[in-house]
Image 1: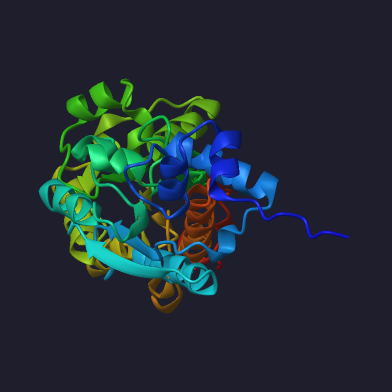
Image 2: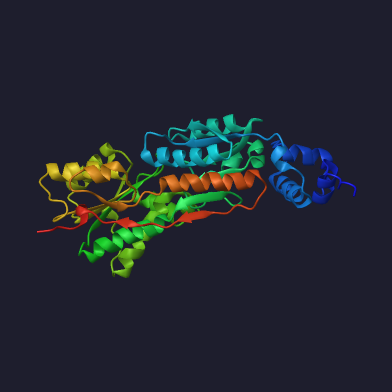
Length: 349
């Protein structure tokens, strides 16, 4: 019985409706091939039994993040690297340092013949593909915001639900004047009027801050309360930022009985200043963090927080990127929020 003939590149090209040269470039990961055409080529190759796994393909992935000193991104990077290693990919970490111009440089640096794909945690609402035409041919996964642009895969925590759960819990404790610290990775907006203007615009999904504010407002309105602009502060993720924000609220004479902060480093700054001023947390003021790590567990009282899913987010980012690289269907991933209750939100006599 004669052996069945092996599928060749011309048959793959014919099946996909492209030229043999295009099929060859697609299977070898050449960035000049349109992403949709590349996907068709890979689908045809699999359907015809062409040995894709033996193709000499690029194995470098670029991860662009604001920084890795923050545990959010160090844990995310670890999840990405663990999945990448199992799949034979190398991860190059590029730091934007929360600077849009540096982020542009990182994206341009990634536009080379060795890049199989990009995972980016953006600091602006810009479509990363707008930086260079070459980026339209490189698979990209976005982490952090819910939606930057159509045609990109997004992996993120359900940030609206995280803030909603936190605010609703504080309301059930009897808290009515809940302060909320708003942040951006880059220095974007620092006043309420501009914040609300963009919050009501099409950019709503581009920044985590807006989704969290939406959850905060939803919980308040369910309780018959309206958001109070005087309870909103614009800060950041650091200890110093939390310390400065809560100090400013007291200087301005704002009355509050709870505070929601972006992460536990910021929360530690808030906690320390309140305790220095003689406030008791939680009997007088409750405190919740929307992201947490070791700090939430070692301060006293321990901080109620949204459970960290950073490592899981990293894993999903790399898994979806591999799908894109292979020309397979990929989709957005939203991780459910879980509230971990500790001593910073209730008082045991």
